Length: 95
Picture (cartoon, one colour):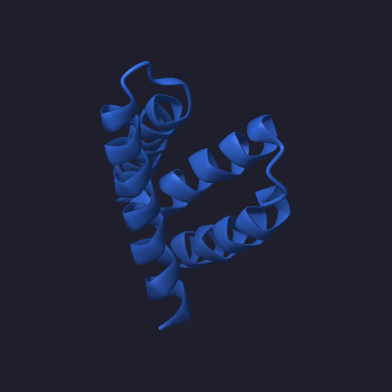
């Protein structure tokens, strides 16, 4: 759920920034969402949805800081952290 949220934030940020990565990120996000749907049932659906939305908001905040933050050192740390989070999600998808 967390990775689906993070990849959703990445996709939206990519489209906003027009960096050309939006479609590839969409494909990775869709694959993660399909896996998430397969393991979500009525008993855990609300918790899964909350995890996904909270992760998306948190990751979006990191990406905003990385792209628009006035403190360049903080922006660079945010960029590295966001990249590391997504790398972990992508590696998990490929494993």
